[in-house]
Length: 120
Image (cartoon, rainbow, N blue to C red; front, side, top):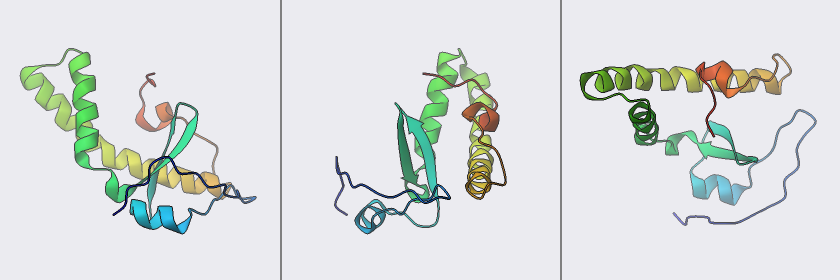
């Protein structure tokens, strides 16, 4: 698979706030039926769900726990707890995004979904 680097293409946004991912990006990046949608440095980032590995979330969780001072058995216990919360949180985000897209719900924040403060 050819990895796309800094490629751009202008896309239209429908009146329902929907976009179409250009076919080359869709295929080359491995999109299927779901994507993770995040905001990074003022940019909207779409990540194919299949490409979001448990390892990426695990690494981020571990970094946060270590920064919070966890170690030893308490680190392992809290890591398992937080890792088990990732999939339900992502599913909740996807459902909320679908509801927002069809005007069935209001916009929610990262804190609403994960019940934690956003970090910079």
